[in-house]
Image (cartoon, rainbow, N blue to C red; front, top):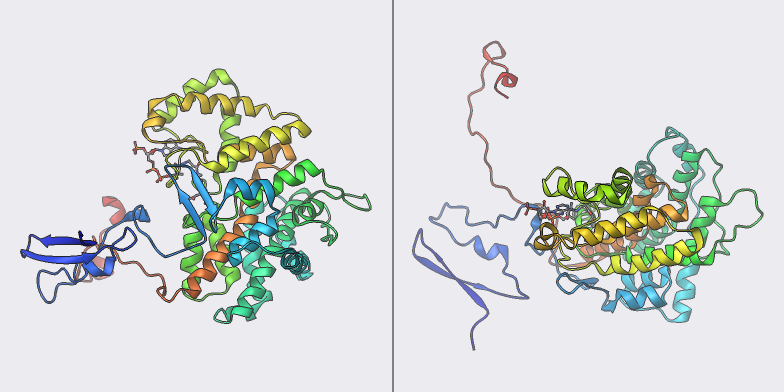
Length: 435
Ligand code: SDX
């Protein structure tokens, strides 16, 4: 029976080392013993952007990038999107099992009764310019909640963690809606406890003077399924930031603000907004070939395409495409959809994209739906952050409870100067001249 080990020979010394293989990985620390002398630090593994590094053990989300598979706690995303509510899926992701009816009722009650924000938050929100990006307002306000709940720093207390988790899941839509209303100069709308999570979000966004907001059921369900599809995605950029920030045991509100900051980048959660801008720039199907050529020339990226893990289709993109048709049946089609469909068709016939295994990802079609429902592009990443808060907090919980984890602190390969003599200021030459 072949042993599950690597035999590594260091040709600098002729020594051979046996390195155990477990779960398809080797432990980086097992290479530290490979030295050329006793005062040698030992070997490290170099992996910029962690393209081939497992940072943790996790049983939350499974992705098979080659087969286009995504499962939350072992349940295929297609089944969850078809049959569950968002809070039902949030419960599954957080606690590892689907809730019974009484458990779900209790969970919905808990979240519903944490949606209010301290009235001071209004004054905080008023500090932003009328045209402040909603994502910036969301991130800042979430961070500010660490001052409202300073007790949240007791992260070693499971009950305290769960209280903050409920508060954050419940308050993200309220903060998001306030950011949106602020940008329009509209008065804020208080939560309505009679409504579901998603309908209440729509209520806080769009209720005007009518006595009770009534959400369009097709649009409410479409938004809920989009929330389900965006809830977690294993060790993506923003979840990794959540884990790293949480590893120093900082306040969870500050950790979520850190994760949302990472999500806001155009290569990550900000891509859905960039896709709409890209489709606006292309503007007609006739302009697609020239745009594709500019992408292949390396002048720009095809936003909404490509993925670090999915090297075939992103299953979420396929489900979102189905939602698009239902939404457009209510709102009327978004003229940009035809350009997006043609762009996908042309790209997937072009070897540049096929050879690099670039397929539409979750962001390629989601923006078209958000826009049709009535959101401005500046709100799209906010709509990603709301459901992903469940994933960030679950990853945070798992990290804190994992005995193998400690403060996140990678090493480096130092390439700079050493032991330089300090010249008096009169004898220094400007580095800019040599820049
Ligand atoms: C999300 O990680 C997650 O799970 C993220 C996410 C989640 O749910 O959390 O799924 C959400 O962030 C989806 C991705 C949204 N971002 C975009 O749509 C932006 C456009 N996509 C690219 O920036 C890129 O595809 C990434 C960032 C998504 C992935 O980058 P990688 O894995 O580092 O891939 P790479 O940059 O090494 O690309 C490999 C090759 C390169 O070409 P060569 O150097 O080999 O010639 O493919 C090219 C890249 O230039 N390439 C693209 C491209 N994406 C990669 N070329 C044109 N357009 C693109 N979109």
